[in-house]
Length: 376
Image (cartoon, rainbow, N blue to C red; front, side, top):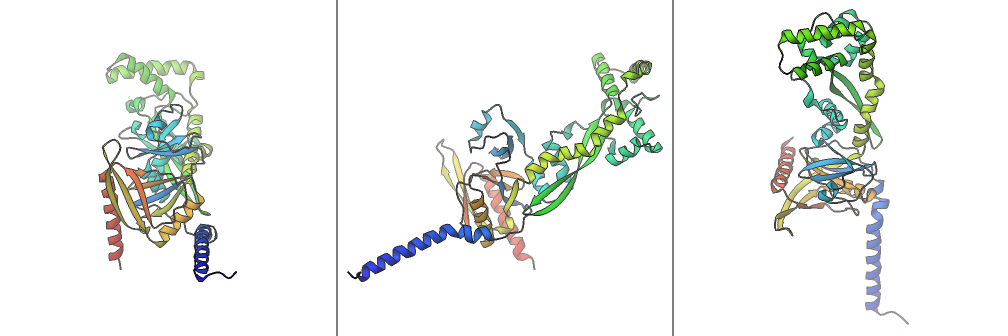
C-alpha cells in the first residue's frame, strides 16, 4: 500500500529529527574531541578544570577555595564537608596558584611554601638571608663564606659555639632561601617554573638557649651574655652534644628535599586546566532571586566566543563528573560539578550569594574586552 504524502513528510521529519539528535550526540566524539587546542595561561577571569581523581577535591565557602585531601569526591555543601572531621583541609592560595601557572617565580615560591605548610609569617622582619648556593659553598670550605655563616648563626659548622654572641641569632637565626623547580605539563607541553622557598634555620644550641632565657622572663644583654657563656662552656666540655650543623644545613638544601617539596604543588598544578580565560569571554550578566532561606541569591551568565564554547564543550565532554572552578582576580566564585557536556556559548553559574563579587567580575570582563577593542 503506497504511503500518503503526509505520512512521507512525517516519516521524513522523524528521520531528520533522529539524525539531528544523533548528530548532536556524536559531534563531541567525532569533531569536538578531535580538535586540538593550545594550553592557556590564566587571565583575570578564568574557568578552571579540576581533576578530582588525584586524591582531593575542591570546595568553595565564603569565596575561599580549599584543597581537601582524601578520596571523598562527592559534590557536597561546605557545611557537610566541614563536618567530616577526619579529612585534612588545606587552603589553596588561588592567586599564587594562578601566578605559578603563568610562570611567575615569586608566586611559585609562595605557592610551594603554602602547599608544604611553611609559614612565612614566622620569619624575622629583617632576616639575614642565605641562599642555598652560598650555604653549599660554605659547607664545602669557602673560608670567607664559612666564617660569615658561622658568625650569623653564632655556631660553627661542627656545632661548637663561637667566642662572641650575636643576640639576634638567639631569636632569629638565619633564613635559608632555596630554589624549588616545579614541572608543569599541559597538553604535552612541558615548562619548568622555579620559585624560592624561604625558611628559618636556628641551631639547636640557640633554640635551647632561648628556652632557658624565656624561663627567666625579661633579661638584660649582660644577663643573656652570662647565660650564653655558661651554656657554651657546658657544650665545650662535652662535644658529643654538639649538633652537626654542616649535616643539618645540607639536609635542608639537598636536591632530594627540593624534589620532595615540589611534589604536592606539582601534583595540584598538573591537575588544573585553564579551560577558558577572559580572552574567550564576550559578555556577562546576572539575575537575582529570593532563596529558600529568604536571602537574595544570584545566577551569573557568561557568554563565550566560538572558540571558548568549543574549548568548554570538549573539556566538559571529556571530564564528566569533575569540577570547574570559576575564579576572578584570584578569588573563587564557585566550584560546580559538570554532570554532562556543556555545548552552549552561554554558561550559567547558579546560587552565588555575593552580588558585589559578581559585579566586579562582570566589570572586569567589560573592561578587558574594551581594552582589546582599543588595541590596534
